[in-house]
Length: 186
Image 1 (cartoon, rainbow, N blue to C red):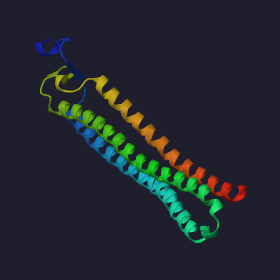
Image 2 (cartoon, one colour):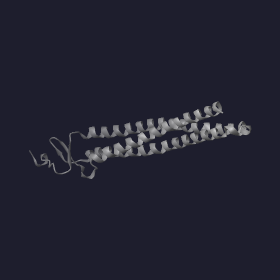
Image 3 (spheres, rainbow, N blue to C red):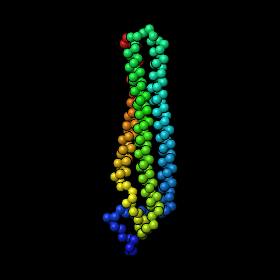
Image 4 (cartoon, rainbow, N blue to C red):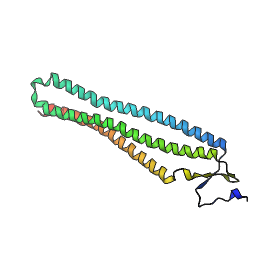
């Protein structure tokens, strides 16, 4: 047993049992997978946001046009139409909020990925090898708790974005219910 085989457990060292080719492959795979996942999520998100934004915004414009032409002689429907416009406006706001929340969530996930790639790149540059593998000084990298907290924060912001998107769709349904109720109940 030589001097390099003794690993002090008190120091921030970690043993990696991978060859450089394996580590390079893992880095390449992580970067490719990250780009593919980002493109997929971006595509889905942009379509969902566009749908709810256009759904609520288009309905609001249609209600305004309806108010301008048909409602001139029927003031009894005015308050119902104002409730419809309020619900649609709130739906548009929630759709825009979803975009902002999704951006924050994606930013946190990207930070998490960068941390994992930093570890792999550190492993690739490690010079100290033992019979059991490479010894890494991980003192410069954040600890596991940091990455767990980052993932939890990303998950939480993603959930907020999902709830906001559901809220935007519900606001459209509420607005349409107000629209129908306005003409049925008066």
